[in-house]
Length: 320
Ligand SMILES: CC(=O)N[C@H](C=O)[C@@H](O)[C@H](O)[C@H](O)CO
Ligand SMILES: CC(=O)C(=O)O
Image 1 (cartoon, rainbow, N blue to C red):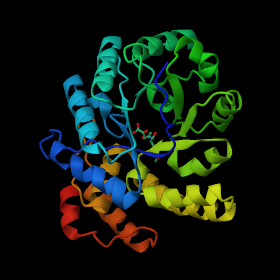
Image 2: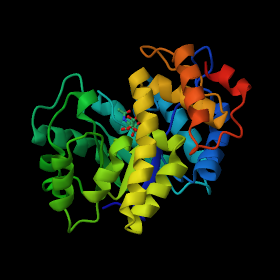
Image 3: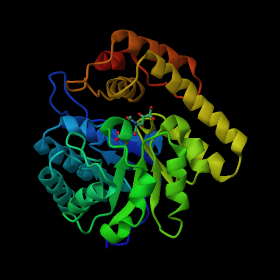
């Protein structure tokens, strides 16, 4: 059983992996990035080496170094650092899980292997169990993201009896729009103290209604404050205010979705908003276009819910 730890709740930022213009990891800005999340966005939990962090595009050695840097720089500043250790190779996943435990991370998360795929719930559980066993003292989270893995085993079925197989199982990161599946995960596990973390930022309010206990997402890097206001309004049962916040967030996300939105664009937006250079993504991703960055900058300036006091032209250069 994982050592009792405070439950992972509230907002969790899925960290970007900063890179230099020639494609190496830019470790030098991670300390600054931690301070930005804590001070400017009020976000104290992070999810490292996931989708947004291009975790599957990094080498195992890079993943270890990135995880270590976040844990080191986050010490005494962040509440929880969860490391995504999913990989196609069970061995690599186990190595990363064990490493996460050694460096003092607060939890590990794993996606379904997505090339040779598990075709049944039992096979997927067996894979996850082998990874979890490599870090027996760390809380384990299953990262459900069927649109990207192609593994469509419903989370609700996977969770049925999961703690008998994986004693460290502590929660689910649910990145899908199927609120029937998500709602049933919550409904059928009310006796457990699981974390139900939603991963579709533009629909978080609906998931809160279904019982989400927190959220992991890319937009909390720069919309953390705004999203926290929505969470507070929801807690106070001021649903119309909460909806206003969700609509504000949606207007921005909808704007970028129409321009074409993904990890590359997240890097460009974060560079713009935070002033910290996130650099280009790694192939097969392509850098966001100059047109994208220009449109987003104009949009950000026209929205009153972000503070752009430090949105400087210089920052634009770094991101474009
Ligand atoms: C596919 C993907 O990257 N999903 C992210 C997390 O799971 C989300 O945070 C989205 O980036 C966000 O909801 C915007 O669509
Ligand atoms: C969004 C998210 O959770 C990820 O980047 O993995």
